[in-house]
Amino acid sequence: MRVELFGIPRLAAGVREVAIPWSPGLTLAGVPEQLAICCPALRGSVITPGGALAPGFVFNRNGRDFLRDPATPIAAGDSLLLLSADAGG
Image: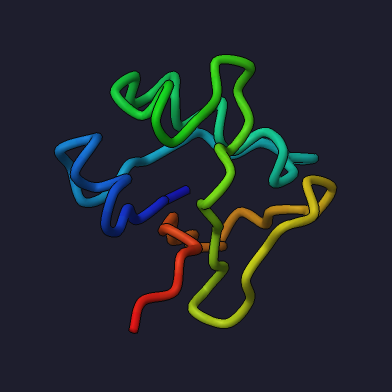
């Protein structure tokens, strides 16, 4: 599956998007660790050493839903966007 990076995550990773493996039963809780495996530069600033999404970042699914619940199932065809949750003025 595809995870597009925007803002700070993109700057940290140096890439626009990352392909991570999808498997049945994948939930939002597993996505940050998969991203850190595929793109180690995200660990520390965007993904915690424990493999969770750092505070201040959020996933958006398919351009419609902001996801915060780690138990949220991720479907094979989902497209995720990782961005900073900070609002600007």
